[in-house]
Image (tube, rainbow, N blue to C red; front, side):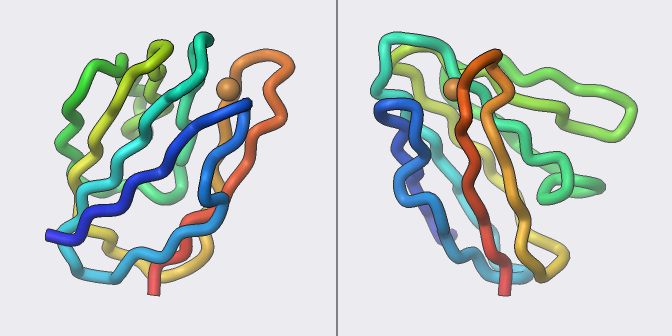
Length: 107
Ligand SMILES: [Cu+2]
């Protein structure tokens, strides 16, 4: 399994650009080093994809699948999935006032 960790620090996703691989089982981790909540909203990347979510985050699901995952301060989430589509998928944190955006590329 390929594993990729994105650090959240100072209201930034670091690195803000990561590469995943099509049809490769993946563990995508987000570690929040801040003292405030952040979220990961990546509807396009996860649309129609089976997910296994671990860690101490709070996933929220809607009719189209995963809406977002809330990551507590100092928290960690791990999302296991297999990317089924290639492309460039932007994601963000939707907490009010947080201008946090980044990109996951699947090739
Ligand atoms: Cu945030």
